[in-house]
Image (tube, rainbow, N blue to C red):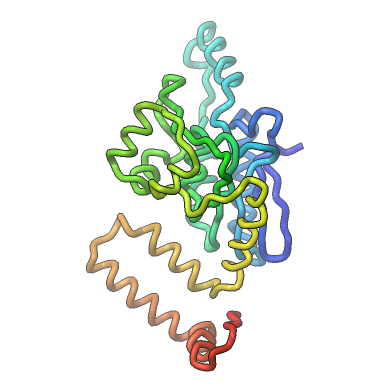
Length: 263
C-alpha cells in the first residue's frame, strides 16, 4: 500500500500520510509518493481545497530513524557512495507543489508533529491542530540541520529569535503555544479535529476560487518584492478581479443582503 494516499470527496481532497504503525515517519518510499500525490492534486481542477493529515493518532514524527541507522551502517563500510544520490529532490518538489498549487492547503495535525512533519505543517496555508499535538523542530536532537523549508517557514511564522530558540534547542511545545506564536490558526479538541478541519475546507470551497488562488500567490511572494512592486501587483490583481463574474456576484449579493454564490 502506498505510503501516501488521496481521498476525494466532491471538491475537497485529503492527502493522508499513511504509515500509522511508525507515526507516519518519512522513510525511503514516502518522498516519491508524496511528490506524486501533490502533483496530482495541484493539477486537479475539480479540487478546491486540500487537507494534509496523518493516518492513525499522529501527523508525522519526522524522519525514519531506522532508515537513517541503515545509512550510517552502510556509510561505515562503503563510505559516501552508500548515501542516496538525491535524498531531497522529491521532497523539495512536494513542498513546492503545496505552496504553489492554486488552492488552499490545510494541515490537520495531531499527536507527534516533529522534524519534517513540522516543516510540512508550516508549508501549508492554514493549520488546525488538535489539543493533544506535541511539536518540535527536533533536527538538532539527531545531529542534523533542518530540511523541508524549516529555516524558510519558521522565522516567517514566529520571528527570528523564537525560531532560533526552537531550532537550536529542539524543545517540545504544545499546540496552544504554537497557536500563540503564530504557527497554528486554531486549536480544537482532538475528537473534533476532522469536523473542524472539514468545516474550514467547506468554507474555503464556497469562496471565489480564482481570487483565493491569486491571493495565496501574492501572500507567498510578499517577502520577495519591494513595496512599490507589490502595490502595482495588487492593483493589477484587483483590476483583474473586477472583470470576473465573482466580483459582480460578491458586490451584488452584499447590496441585496443575500448569501453569496460564487461561481
